[in-house]
Length: 390
Ligand SMILES: Cc1ncc(COP(=O)(O)O)c(C=O)c1O
Picture 1 (cartoon, rainbow, N blue to C red):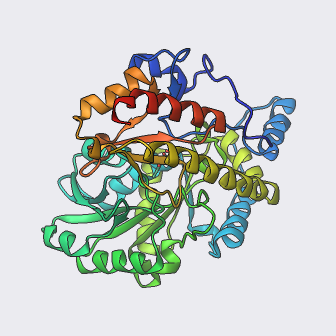
Picture 2 (cartoon, helix red, strand yellow):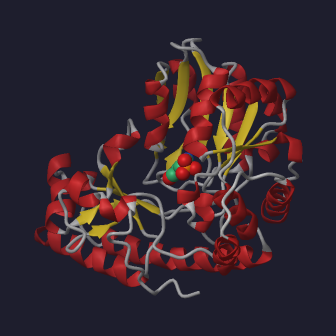
């Protein structure tokens, strides 16, 4: 697998490339799409082979018998994360935005507070508000360019109306891999305030060399009765269009509440996703992920070196994810000015930090899961757009 080979995606119904003109007013012929969190890479050969088996049969009926799929998940979690998952704890949803939305329905009522550690993945707040619940933003502390918990501050914020905490582990954006001690602190916070914890671990495989992700369920077994784990193959293997996610609930009472909402929403799996994920969670998939993370780590170094060479610009050192989180606060420029320079001058489409909630205002999120030459091109363009500072 060569991650260096560009794949033309313009005109392929790619959200990232084919919506950029409409949303950013940047033509895909001139600009570079570095926003939406999917990758410019093909998945492992095993995934392609699984789809080819389906298309050569040419039958696309309802999916049944998920035993191979569940075994593949169990194998992956055990070998990659040291976590034993029981088959009957696993729900298959249409992705983790869907999984989060179902949790909000299952575990909160209109008007309840849902705690987010901001800045955090923007879809969480969108879902919570659309469901008529209140977003409670608990800002992370930015300590010398790295996010840390601010448990004392968050304790002081709680009113008693909060029912749910959505944890993002590893964290998007900013790329923190929460340590076992930090996860225990979060668990203690949830216990003190009687919160159910939904741990979105979609980025758990995309961990940079030298870091180790700890699943919340292993870090804090003491909160098993209030814990919902969420994982997915889609971010890891770049198959997000398959819309597939796992919501894993060990506690029988929480499991029953979630099952009722799944039933009420009429959710059943998409056969393409099931075949792709089963194939991906395999020894070949594991080799591919190891090669991928090594490649992403080099891309990260290129991006960081380029951004940090611009006075006033700082890129957070990613411990996980392929989503560089770049702070323009030190330039003294307004949000409009630094964003315009990146978008209108450099013609790089990024996610705006402000959409991730409190603390994100001076940041742009740049997706580096692309051929290295594209990262180098983006760095050169952004450096040029800020050349007056150098
Ligand atoms: C933390 C987090 N959760 C969920 C998602 C999206 O999940 P899905 O595509 O399964 O809905 C993303 C996508 O970037 C994400 O970063």
